[in-house]
Amino acid sequence: MGEVALSRRIHSINDVGSLVGEHLGYSSYVTVTQAMISTFADATGDHQWIHVDVERAATGPYGHTIAHGYLIVSMIPALLNQVLVVEEPGTRINYGLNRVRFTTPVLEGRDVRVGATIASVEPAGAGCQIILDVIVELRDVDKPACVAQVVYRWYPA
Image (tube, rainbow, N blue to C red; front, side, top):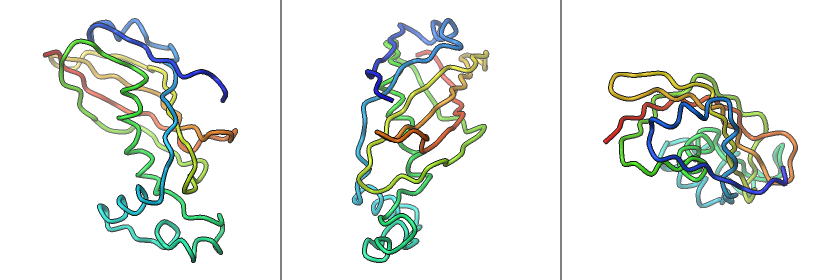
């Protein structure tokens, strides 16, 4: 948990296959604010009180509002951009999720970061399909907020 954030740099998507099985490092921490949670609620229409009603949530099971699980998932791509930098221009598409689990609620005001390992790289048309095992960690908490396997399609420029 106290490891220094690192990032891997590769020149092109052709180099990503050499990283299969390697932990890529960690993003910087980002604080999940009530403004982020409320904006996400507005964008998705999910205004459940545990997310947006600060006063009621204070008396609820967590003593705080909590982030939507899908808000945390939506943060993964931007945080992964800090973990793996590809210098060559190209197109990277979020292709889906094989698995996602929300293992610890993210209370408003908590800091999260992403750590990732490349699970596999396979050809996909003119590009490749990359599967990453991602852990969204909470600062100073042993159990992760989210564990996911994310799938990307990358295509060269």
